[in-house]
Length: 79
Ligand SMILES: Cc1cc2nc3c(=O)[nH]c(=O)nc-3n(C[C@H](O)[C@H](O)[C@H](O)COP(=O)(O)OP(=O)(O)OC[C@H]3O[C@@H](n4cnc5c(N)ncnc54)[C@H](O)[C@@H]3O)c2cc1C
Image: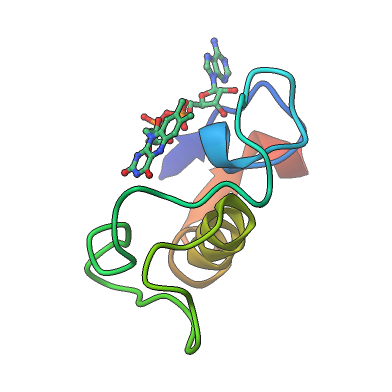
């Protein structure tokens, strides 16, 4: 059983621009490509920019949680 600890209200870490600790803004472009800024078991959505915006990385991470982690994890976001 995996337990996810997150102090802010949502996942995304630096890429969650809605939190004070993030320091990124939604339109910020990653300086890494979408193929190097993804996990091996989930591709970015079709149409994602070569260097995705922060909002796109956050959306990708949220989708990753839903597809790969939430089915197997007990997150404190839900407790
Ligand atoms: C301005 C900027 C631009 C960047 N651009 C890129 C890029 O283009 N490409 C790239 O690959 N990387 C980039 N990075 C690096 C970026 O930090 C990583 O991509 C990634 O966010 C690191 O993930 P992480 O989970 O290690 O840390 P973070 O994303 O920082 O996530 C850590 C999480 O842990 C939580 N947390 C911390 N302490 C606690 C606690 N005690 N209890 C509960 N929760 C806690 C925080 O709230 C946060 O959500 C950039 C970083 C910055 C600052």
